[in-house]
Image 1 (cartoon, rainbow, N blue to C red):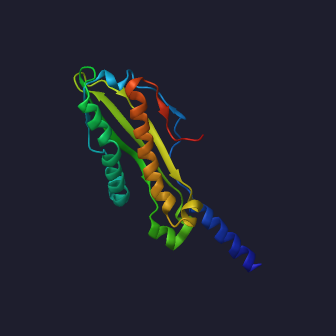
Image 2 (cartoon, helix red, strand yellow):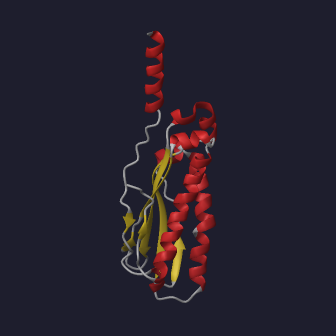
Image 3 (cartoon, helix red, strand yellow):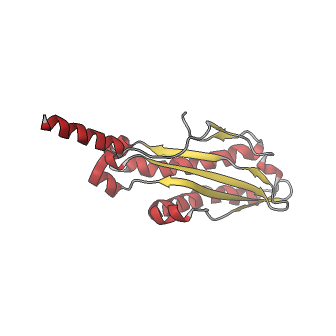
Length: 186
């Protein structure tokens, strides 16, 4: 009887560790109010990170900043070389929420560390008027058991996926305002 009680307690404990509380996001982002090629100058701002996320997830935040510089800055630089429309816009990546399980945590406690997940936004603002022309949001997550099985590889790939989704949104909305997927599956 004690063995069954102990096994039940361990099973419940492992399920409780998997809880990751990230709000759901819609399936599709709306398009910006106009195509991005209507502008001639583009500026990628620093990533905005809430203090609580920056202090709790410093390595994941540093990796996100690195990936954004590697993937989004070249897009913006390429657009600035062309002669598009008139005016300037700023593109500000924002971390809304982030729970990242490191490889070390995965090795120590596996799936009981829970899932990893992040929600990010891109605030696209017309500089002259201050008007926000687009504010898409993106979701990426990594399953607790997948993370445990891969020793944290899926957790790291989650960061790659969210930046890739932002990159796709920007490039898709350059020639025509079409919106794009958020990464949500529900």
